[in-house]
Length: 346
Ligand SMILES: [Zn+2]
Image 1 (cartoon, protein in one colour):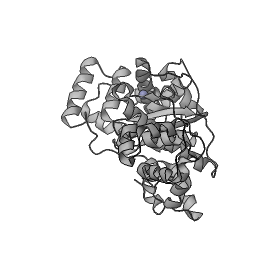
Image 2 (image 1 turned 135 degrees about the vertical axis):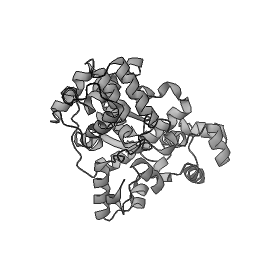
Image 3 (image 1 turned 60 degrees about the vertical axis):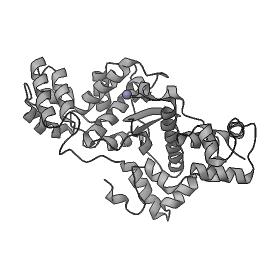
Image 4 (image 1 turned 45 degrees about the horizontal axis):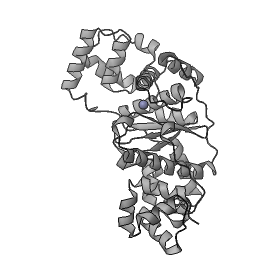
């Protein structure tokens, strides 16, 4: 028996309209919509045809009900710039990642969720509270993804077709999730992850967090979390030049522009000083990129999980088959990890 919600997810995952899927399969849009709303049941060969067109197994299409991620549950930085189809595609890819997560969750003991919920707090103090709760003090965060995972956040990579997005996050059945673009610089990736943590901490209790201020709040949280106020104030960076910012950014593993902005925010740079630092950094290419930057962070948790799966005799193909997706689809969600070389990840 077909599970209608799974057909919808698999179709939207590929960014397909009903019309386009009809063209690909030779089925009518009327039949397809009656499958999707549960008014008709496809024959076995039709089911196989749909599965092939959507790069999933027939077992995937007949699995347990998989309700879609509601748009309102997600904080999208680029929400307003996306078409409905792009949004659906990103959310459906996320839904596939949640199915991967279910497979993992059923087999492994994962860290307990330990994120403060600080709705309505000032972002600066919320970042301090979160740091204190996690015992980070004023120290730089050596690996943002590992810290998030250690405190119970599940992190998956955004699939390539969704590269117009930096990241998004949501609570799903009480569990925090972050989906990250892996195409940005290492510094940007850390900031994006901290930004999403800001949404989870500050806006996790709202169903509709997409107020314009929510983005500013999440950015302020990220800056305060990665570059703690007291440590930055004590760093001797008053009136820093572009040159000094480039040396100091390595301490906190942030982009040069993010550090310049933080210094300005903490009144360590004047208006004029901030503007001239930005000009100096832009001349060296730091406005649009991060020359000589750090490596991208990757998931430690997924690397451990899949290393252990391999020790239990699983392959990428067998795990993918158990979930009902292709090995390539599985890899796209898990930072490109493979089961044969999990220790050599980027
Ligand atoms: Zn955001």
